[in-house]
Length: 456
Ligand code: NDP
Image 1 (spheres, rainbow, N blue to C red):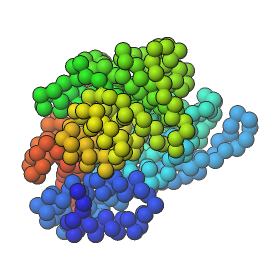
Image 2: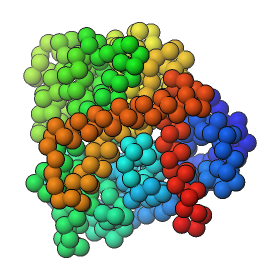
Image 3: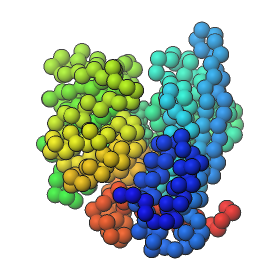
Image 4: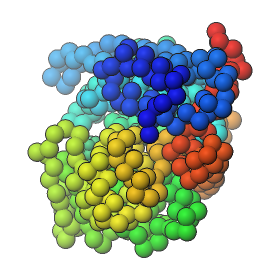
């Protein structure tokens, strides 16, 4: 699909001229605008009020210096970002990513996706995202703490429980969220739900840790069942071995699938007997080690090293034979060659756990071959949805049981699937969940923007 609508085309070309170096952001925008063509054609007020040019421009971009002292006493400097993209339907909400490769363009792509994802959850949350080119990998706990404190020493003045509520993402797990929250509280002298993904003893929600991974599987299960299929007896590949991947592995197994492969940036493992998520948790969350260590627990498993490959290109995992693929690592991890391998292996569906894991060419190939496909903004929305539930519990000063939160999460994922399906049908693209997700998410935000006038 290409952008042929003249209004959308002119907005996109203007953006391309302005932000040509922000490739991932442009990729995310193009994917959304392509799907919005029938909507813009049917709703002339969107062009009259220039909603598209407004929605692709963040309301506010904050960049800042983060200086901190390493264990050797040397002063280090990193760059910090917070992109407050859109607050039409609620306070900005979206995670923080700490990883070497982080750039403003990457944070803008993630923030843009977050607008539509948050709208799809049906909860009142606007879109935002932040991060830094700091990588906690290989740093001591004390270094991570000092970095997080310095990062929050600037960020605190821009966020708040009713303004902007960050959370975790790559490189920001329970440890980092704890340090960030501690510093916020120290500075403002208030205990509020300013960040989600908190520890259970200080306002965190049960099932938040599991939510994104579980949510991907609940979404996939709803879509599979709607198409007369299920996880039962299926071979499953889950890429990555972080927060999302670990709990996708657990839930896919609970739903009757067998997870045969998982990966990290060094390589991937294959266990024909099914990967035990508890071993992955031990290796990644406790030991903070490489996935290769899995062989120390299960010597019959296979390990394929991919360290010689270019950075970010660990895609060998997609050549393994599977029925269901759950990319849960990073953006653009599944390219056209991977899509072709998945199709040749006879897979039935690809359900995205990470943000924008499939390249545009890969998506076109998967859909063209008739595979079921769900975009991350729909199928990984369970994490932010449960963050929304954490915010509700914080406001009420209550905490719900694991079962209550999990049941709400499952209900939300099923509703998101139903809404995406309905939106796709309404705009003449039945079964196209990618189009449905973009349209349903967009319409909610666009209608709020229209109602709030221009200079809001
Ligand atoms: P983590 O940092 O916990 O884990 C990321 C995992 O992906 C790590 O195992 C990492 O390997 C691996 N990885 C990164 N790049 C590659 C690559 N090129 N090839 C293979 N493996 C790779 O992050 P999360 O699990 O939190 O996030 C994963 C994805 O899900 C991201 O796209 C994130 O934006 C998205 N997401 C996360 C949510 C959440 O609640 N956490 C919510 C919604 C979306 P290594 O250990 O070597 O670094």
